Length: 276
Ligand code: HEC
Ligand code: HEC
Image 1 (cartoon, rainbow, N blue to C red):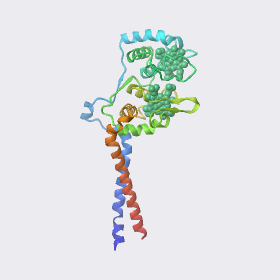
Image 2: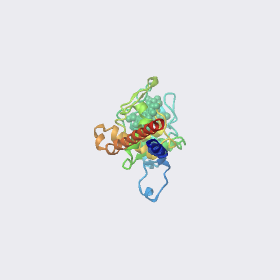
Image 3: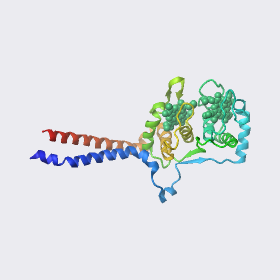
Image 4: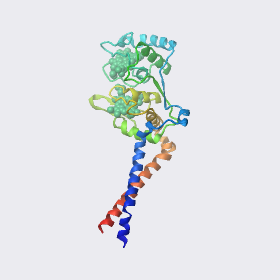
């Protein structure tokens, strides 16, 4: 008498399992689905996840020209046209130039190695001036992002940022962001010093052996989530428990594990019911 009763529950079990699967899917797919969410009135009131600065003043361009002439032109040429020892910079876009200068990679002292992250020679305002000058020489090529990204991490989702980081970045930079050696003597550097703008610039411009993650791969909101995770959690591992991740992350993960666990038990229960 019991078995038919159990078996009659089977369709409900299948529905429940489908729901569990659907929920798990929607949780993982959330990262992808977010970018396609419809604009609502409320959305337009919240600041965009990334603000790209594309316009520079004549004064900035002039300042940048002086700095470029004194520090870059010996290798890259006076109009950034490139030379036998250094690449053409025209059309690269301000985010690329700002990244290489603000992380201290440029100016380069020894052109035989991978340009290293080192204490920058210029402050952020000077790096922006140099980027403004290079940008004034030629229109930015369509494959490069338009401007210097300023990231709003206040509204970011650390939980999604962590997942996206694990999926897209940890293979090279490691899960802790400590960095690691890659093939061909190259290495992925530590992420512990990068500013939020530099993390976004690296993602969008793909320096050296790092791939470019364009808007088709990661939306601005997803980039902001990753930036928030890198600057908020990776760079402050001791705060882990105090951040939103501690409050939301384990609960959500545990919830999924619980659902899968219960779902698994249900499968076993029904399977036994069928056989017995
Ligand atoms: C000693 C020569 C030298 C000097 C000086 C120098 N560079 Fe470079 N630069 C290079 C070389 C070589 C590379 C290619 C290095 C690499 O890809 O790792 C490069 C790469 C770059 C790149 C990346 C190009 C790309 O396609 O991604 C940028 C941007 C750049 N330099 C900007 C500057 C700026 C701005 C200055 C001055 C502040 C400067 N460089 C000074 C030699 C130099
Ligand atoms: C295929 C390996 C690879 C992947 C995947 C990768 N990177 Fe990188 N990343 C690199 C390499 C190599 C460099 C150094 C480039 C150079 O200096 O020539 C770098 C540089 C950086 C820097 C500059 C750090 C500094 O302070 O100088 C940041 C920030 C960064 N990556 C963030 C990320 C993020 C965030 C992701 C994921 C969205 C990511 N990277 C994915 C290889 C990778």
